Image (cartoon, one colour):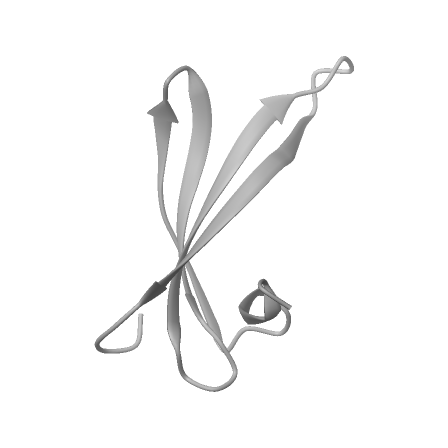
Length: 67
């Protein structure tokens, strides 16, 4: 239930890819169906077959205007 904003979001904006202590991390702005704003941080990791997968996600509630 803590990640409900990620299910059928109203809007998604991929903002940047940055290095977080050697781990590529995407910063993504999300607007949930109820209009609340969130910032998601997706940590990425390379797999043995050289593909990339999400290794984890941190979701932070934001205040203010929609993304």
